[in-house]
Image 1: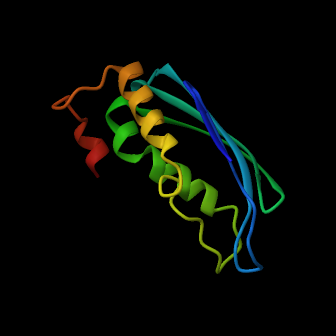
Image 2: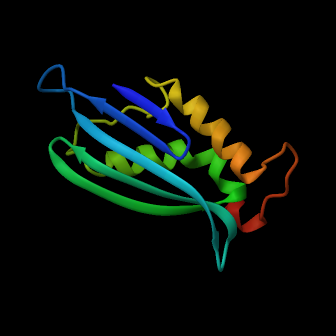
Length: 122
């Protein structure tokens, strides 16, 4: 199951076998101002992975959010899985991330050619 509403995504997956994994995650996001990084998006991913609670919060600056929010969410989810299980990229099974991407782009008024802080390229 997957649902999108502006500012909120809910995804759920049931493991198909013992090598697979299950999760039930809500991802909430909102535009905010960070004193150091400036305008960006505050993310809150919570729910469960493999039946264990997940509660992750993180901020991405405007120039970082669109190129990397799915990668950040996937890495954080992966940290809750025991090796050798791998968390698939969150964008692969769910087209709703296209809606999330567009919502974030509009919320932050991101345009092609917007400047990127050099320290974010490292």
